Amino acid sequence: MLDLSIARLTRLALTWVGNKSRYEGVGIPKHTLVPLNDVAQEMLTHALLKPFEKTEEFFYFHHEEDVSHHQLFQACHTVFENPESLAETAAQLAQQLYEHADQPKVKGGEFFIAHFEDVILQGETVNAIALWKVQDKESYFKIDRGAEAFQLNVLEGISLGKPDTAALVFQLDEAEGYRICAVDTVSKRGERSFWKDAFLRLRPIEDNYFHTRHYISLAGEFINDKLPQGLDRTDQLDLLYRSGLYFKENEEFELEDFTKTMFEEPEQQQAFLDFKDTYTKAYAAPLEEKFDINQQAVKKEFKVLKSVLKLDQNFHIYVHGRRDLIERGFDDDKGKKFYKVYFDDEE
Image 1 (cartoon, rainbow, N blue to C red):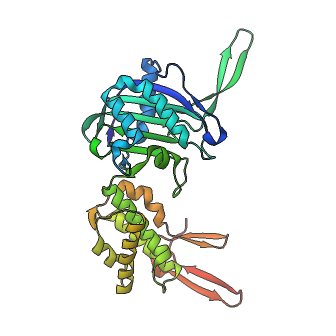
Image 2 (cartoon, helix red, strand yellow; image 1 turned 180 degrees about the horizontal axis):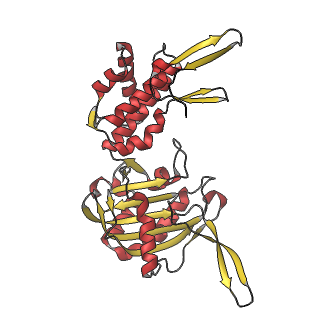
């Protein structure tokens, strides 16, 4: 967990990065460092750090040969060693970001680079560098009061809410590539991220969050798409629901126990273990067979195990257990399939 109680924003540099595919260019002022008063400093500390306060998903910078060749790693190392170099480094980072800002959905916007001291991560006080790219702005009213009349003007500004793309680099685990948490709401799930994959070039840390997230994804993919034939959709949904309960109700994951709990038939058990091996190779995700379940990962990924019967365009039935109270059949007179659901109370 992140503790911001004594965090101090020591330096802030500001540039502007456009979309490369639209030839918007980069805006780098003569002086990139921005002077801050106490109010602005407090607001920016909250805006740049607050989105990461509860995160438990961490990454490292990644380079195929050695992380010391990673450009952002080198830039962060320079700033950590000499915070006064932030102004020059900010201009370099803006140019690097522009090279990767070529997807149609990427909008031109301000690029913040900030240096913090006394950020507490999991009980350890460290320095950190925040990277924050503005994607969208909000409209607001500014009222100028005059003696004759009030003037209403519409202006655009930057929201201090959750950022679209941001990262926080901690001065920890330097040899592995610094500990990092990152946000990207611009790229959709499963597609390449201009921010995380292209610009930051991250690899996830293989901790309990990593293992929990991947096993939930693995279980959902197997039950929905790879399970041996013989189960109808309601049986699949029951398996999805029970696998979700396993992650919610247990503190520890153990592969053999999970496999035997979820799948009664030896054929299904072996098919799941075989799929686990295929999954780990396909996603380059070496998965432990025993670890403590991370509940934040469960909360974030639980939608993968959503149990929903989608019937044409008319009905969605959410199944939360009790497979024995759902019956499936076919009505000869109407020529349509049906589900019969038994219940006690209606809300």
